[in-house]
Length: 190
Image (cartoon, rainbow, N blue to C red):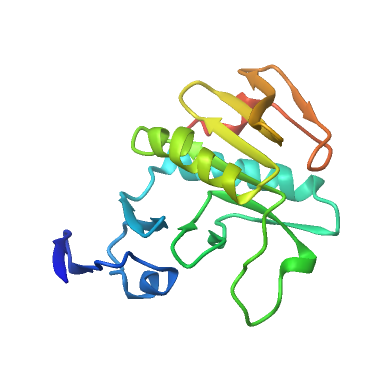
């Protein structure tokens, strides 16, 4: 194994690829660690604006969520194999998939990512295609800079744009459950 340097610790590179078990050994250095097809993704901690938008979306979804679902934010890892473990900013899980004392292994009803300058490419491409491959029915992208929300729905041909709104335009959707929001109200103004 070779070592990969970070600001606080060395991470051993695995020739056979990283697994979700390796995440427990990652340093507590403020970075965000995920695994995609055995490749370790390391991101800087998101800025406060990102966290504020994610918290506002969580509040709105939580208030509208039906009893058979549960809104996580931050989310437990979404994983289908030991070699892929992604942590969306928000995840709506089926309560039937939540088993006390075990890792979450279900397919979420939806996931949401709040874009930042550091995450936009990963969120728009890699995570979108991974959630699509994992069968996540709805993928939400919140663009804090553009004050917009784009929702993708999974079809037989992959994700297609299901709904979009920006600024003060109301966005009302019926799936995965009925909810209405205004994108600009997800953005915290100091």
